[in-house]
Length: 415
Image 1 (cartoon, rainbow, N blue to C red):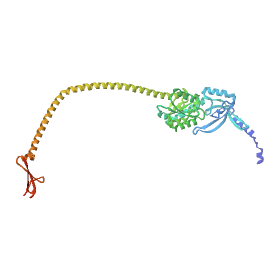
Image 2 (cartoon, rainbow, N blue to C red):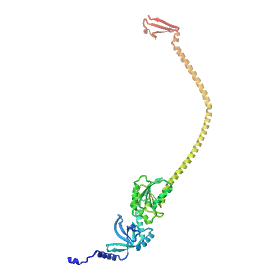
Image 3 (spheres, rainbow, N blue to C red):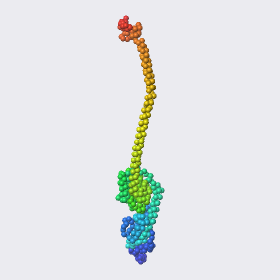
């Protein structure tokens, strides 16, 4: 048995890899079309030969399920890059899904194989971007997220602004410069985030989470400078769109130019074409408010002046009316006052006459009841110890008694 095994061919590593090379290249003798997502390309830009990878993802879980090494050699680089940029209005970059015309290349010393790209179909890339974009939009619309941020209320005077962009980028400079030209006061809270490349999704989402936790922020602005359509496709992003939809602050975008409209623009409270027009949006809103205040001030002054004139005229007319009514009243009641005075005088004369008569009668009654007058009529009053005697029982033998008569007193002793 061992003898039989020893007669079988034993391959060296190079021999085995060479056999594999012949099998693979024999199975794929010509050029083939391969599709996959570019990764690791951006770091190789500008190199004589570009080495990167093509990867395939699970569309449901967004997970990498396979990879293959790829290369574009110097002889084909210029032709491929120029063709792609002319048709697709962009450059090759990481994250794009491409359809590439390749040959299988095996390198026996290392036992590795790769695809050597000879040509690329730019229209496939644009179609995949459009297809992905349409799928995201359909999902957002179904979930009611496209207009969710638009339902928020933006402050009438939005002066506290959260700015998301890359520090010192063209978009940052244009936005800040436009605000400064207005000479209005704005409080800018800046969050540095990539606006191009693979980091856009994670950094922009982190920035939105940051501002969602901040108080007293009137609006959040996302801006970037110019770029190709596929560069802007970083903002055809489902996660960024969801973050904006659930943000409790209105979001203003200025991430493209006149003909560009990303999914991020679609879900935002307001879409502006450029960073400069995004800044103008805030400036014009505040200026409109100030204009309304000025107009109201003029209207208040005008109405106040008219009201003052009207009230003054009313006062003048009222004064004239009072004078007329007073004069008529005095003239009308003058004779009546005279008659009333005459009647009053007569009344008081009669009144006092009756009073005097009543007093006279009371005086006669008082005089007739006066003991002195009664005594003068022949009566007398006897008193013992100053007390008038009304009964014989009130006196005793031996008491002194005084009897008053009309012309004097009689003193006696009771026996």
